[in-house]
Image (tube, rainbow, N blue to C red; front, side, top):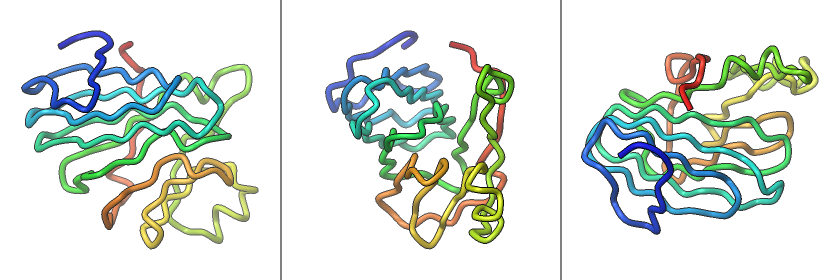
Length: 153
């Protein structure tokens, strides 16, 4: 399945899929059992978070940075298999954004919240003072769960 899908809460694909959630309204995605690339984009500047169940594969969640709203609620992120991918272009855009993730709240505060902050205690990923991603289950993420790369959209 390539391109944009209207998932409407259905399980989609059997793996190796590129799924794009365009960010204008809250969508519900249940990815299939295979390894997928899931793009979660912003666009509405309001809290219209997409709810994502990644399924059983090794999934990559491409998260667009948003200062204002939660872009995703993730049901079943696997710290041993899944990763977040931030767009390398964010760091060199007209208004550059730092895609570095820290797990140290003091370091995050000292940076004037210019870093992304992953709070395993709260099960939340912050961008600035905004909750960018919420996890509905307990997670224990590490730097291995985050990378920056050139997006293939």
